[in-house]
Image (cartoon, rainbow, N blue to C red; front, top):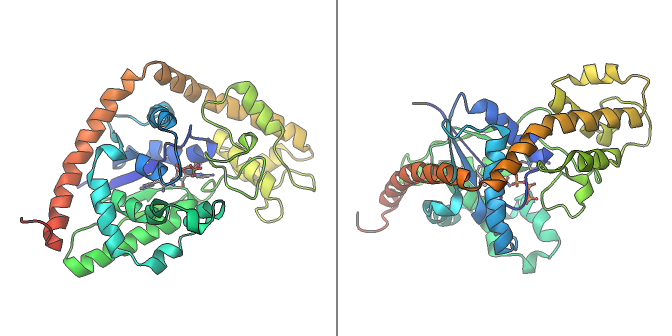
Length: 331
Ligand code: ATP
Ligand code: LTN
């Protein structure tokens, strides 16, 4: 049996360069080695308030971005989470397997509940990792490629899968996490101490995959740098420049050493100008394809129908086994 890859993006806006470098780009390579399920996790997106119109458009935008970066629907199953109800069912069950203490340790919940305060945060935001565990475990996933903000959630998934298997008998495959060495956490250009994020209020720090060339240039030229000069890679001492160099590395394939050498004796201005051009060049074909799918949403429908049917087939079988193992219903 071929190993299986599962991953997802929330339809909370157009994916950005961080999503691309940290997740999507790796998927394009990995699709040749694994059976793949790429989910648009709308049920995760609604754990913070969403406008229904934006959600609908955002969902199609993620599908468009998946195809535009090079995911091949003949090789992978691309589908919308809410169209496969077994995710919700297993999500509930995972909530009965997880402990409050474990969920309370999740840093994403702590971060996302900071703004409105814990008391006013949704229960769904708290239960988020249980649903994510369900997403992954439903498909006998062996590998989960994500950015490093998701490490804790995948580790919890492994724990819940093992706990279920120990209690109820072998049911789930325990997945491995896949994180890349450089680029697993691309930082905001405007606030290099925060990760680049779709929901970032400061849009100048985030390069969206559908930004036009001038917008990309503008954002990069305004990017925050470090107090001392010089294009050298040092994550702790020069975090802002290290972030820009990591982006350069991913756009060109040049190593960090080669980049340092290329810009020896040059200033931030020259480096940023060059960075802007390599980002513009790299993203141009992707942006063009996203635009095409936005104008031809019907091209996405077949892909999403096919993905939904394939996912439902697997998820339905797994849920039958889960209900049986737990003694649910009349089987
Ligand atoms: P939101 O702002 O709505 O929380 P997000 O920008 O964090 O969204 P997600 O949909 O949560 O994006 O993430 C999709 C994938 O991209 C995940 O694998 C996540 O780990 C990865 N990712 C998100 N942000 C970054 C980043 N700044 N650098 C690298 N990878 C990232
Ligand atoms: N929580 C993830 C999105 C996500 C996911 C998944 C990723 C939901 N379910 C399953 C991998 C596997 C995030 O990016 N914030």
